[in-house]
Amino acid sequence: MNIDDLDATGLLCPLPVLKLRKRLGAIAVGDAIKMRADDPAAIVDVPHFCAEAGHALVEMTEDAGHHVYLVRKGG
View 1 (cartoon, helix red, strand yellow):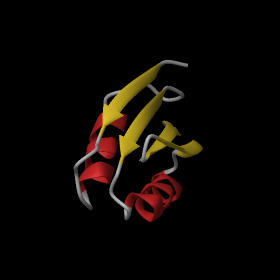
View 2: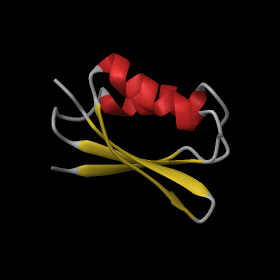
View 3: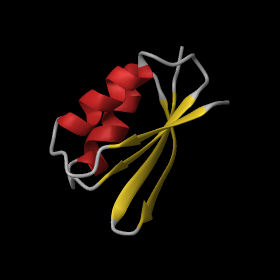
């Protein structure tokens, strides 16, 4: 599994999810993106987006005041 990085810090809703969606479109099924975001709405938006779009939210952690989401592209 390849893991790409996406820095969405400083972006407000809906930009983190829009950037995640665009980046997921460019990778292979089964690969993943590790996205950092500091928008409080992303805590709700990212899991909802993954559930609706068929992607797997593998992990959600906090690091240095940012939330880190590991999302695996679904098929």
